[in-house]
Image (cartoon, one colour):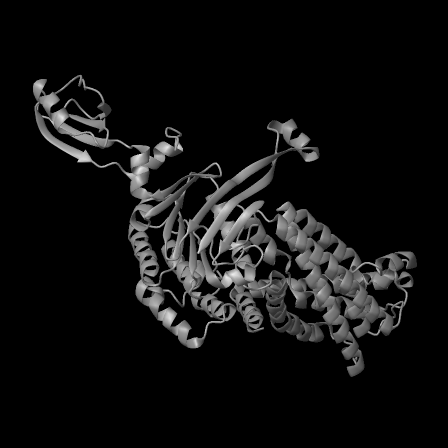
Length: 328
Length: 263
């Protein structure tokens, strides 16, 4: 469905000198620098797959998405989306893809939502019957009917996102690119949007590439993640394997019956945080048996009141990676 | 074609969305007509010898008609520049239509609104307020209409070319100011070009500017221009073609340079 080979995108950026004289000098001359936004990446995505495409700010996620949609030309490399080269056949590609940029909108802000949909119907040559069916589908799943006749400018962020999602799917695209679709949304709307994305992926077999900083989006929706950093893909595989690879530790929330002023732990345990003399948060490797620690507490006279083990979270693993603590 | 007609319709609807903005801009346009006619009245009374064939009445008629033509076009330079600057142009580039045709349709929607909702009411109002109107023959109106269409094409090219500069420079405000100054001085929107000395007229006639407002207004008023109507049309064809090629060139290079702001 999507095939990317040795894709690179380099931008020329001008470096301004700092300070007052620096800015004056920059008016005449500024140093050029090549920024490798995407640097020789390759991957394949099968039809109906939902892939989480993640990475820190400026990692190259959005640049990749823009090249996949055909609005940015790659510096080098090859992209095929359902057999189409997006930058060479932009119009043809447009019929088979849908795109949502969470921080932008394709709605006509000064007009009611229905006017934008009416325009999209003509742009994508959607027949009346299909259009009506699609509209009903969105009314049911997203509650679009509640604000269909409202001016887009007056919609809440959640309503705007729902309308944008529906607009991007009106022409039944085979591939959907979602660039931070839940940014700024409240919990309830986030949940609704996630459910909707899952529904169209599972039932309509729409291939989805999801870019987000919200790890819950990824955990809820994607089985596979691709992690990009400084333009290079650092990980491409299942979420479960990613956790193992990064080796994120489990956390133990420990409550003692009697106060423990200085808790001394054997290897490989360590203290993450001391809340009080009674409560500690400990780190331990995920595959370490807990019995060993319980024996230690027993032998050293630490009386336990309560112990909770928290599983390693994807967010922690990603945080470790972003911080450069782990090289994959 | 249906897409572009729909785009024209949506652009028209968008123009009509804000009532107060409509009434204020109508008042602005009338104020401009009032200022120009007052200035020309004074100039004609104080300095009639340097105005050539222009009389007080014909100058007032010129001021009204050139302003009405300008009002009927609306403003289109910012339709794309704001989108390019913010990165929202991405959505337009993702649609299966041509960016130039989208822009033309958007401009047409605005202009149809301007013509019907601003220029016509102002024309009627000016007729009663100033009471001086030329008798226009059908043939003259036909000639004017041809010039008007060509002039509109020049206006579209200028707007699109200016917008596409945003692909290169992001901030194009200074270009807009420069364009606006050149239009004010050379297009005949304020000063009839044939008031200038002959050598300036000769130079200006090779630029696209006087073809925007001066020639259509002069043709409508039967004012003398330096060449025949046939020559005027061939000059229009030359101007539209050369400006069209230049515009396409800017667009073609710009679209390759596009770098979208933000994520």
